[in-house]
Amino acid sequence: MCNNEETVVFGLIKSFTSNFLSCLNQFGYNCSYYKLLGDGALVIWDKLDGVAIKEAITVFTTYIEFAKEELFKSYKTLSIGGALVLDKVYKYEISAEASQLKYRDYVGYGINLACRLQNLAVGGELIISKNLASIGAIYAKKSTNPDSIKKLRALKGLKEDDREGIYLYQD
Image 1 (cartoon, rainbow, N blue to C red):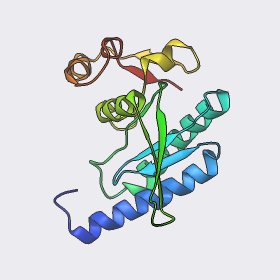
Image 2 (tube, rainbow, N blue to C red; image 1 turned 90 degrees about the horizontal axis):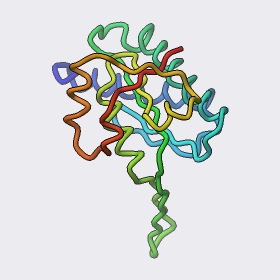
Image 3 (cartoon, one colour; image 1 turned 45 degrees about the vertical axis):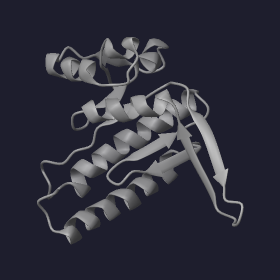
Image 4 (spheres, rainbow, N blue to C red; image 1 turned 135 degrees about the vertical axis):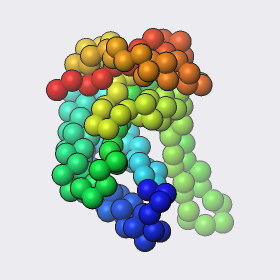
């Protein structure tokens, strides 16, 4: 996108975010937090159960389909990849004493892992963390792509267990 006019880039980001929020409101109503990240998003469900997993998969697959058919129609080189992670995260809130402003965010290894894994996802892929794949709640197939495995092992800040393989969501 860096080769396009600023108005084109901002128009696409605006469309990406407004349509993503619409999808999230329609299919991810039990999520506890979301944060837009420019050309991406972070969504958190505080409770792991079948509903949360189904919602996360539905949001991802529905939005991927929309992006392919509509949003990126004129931009054949653009695509979306994602990561679904089960790990500990910590919520924190900060309030400014002099005003009513509050800031809430999440931090922790799970956030870092999700960001790193989603960067490895090639258009349309949803990478599942090893922890989530190991509980059997989602069917995921271990990738055998040597280039992807090499990129995974080169990532900084991952636990050794998370460097062992890439698990791809299978419908």
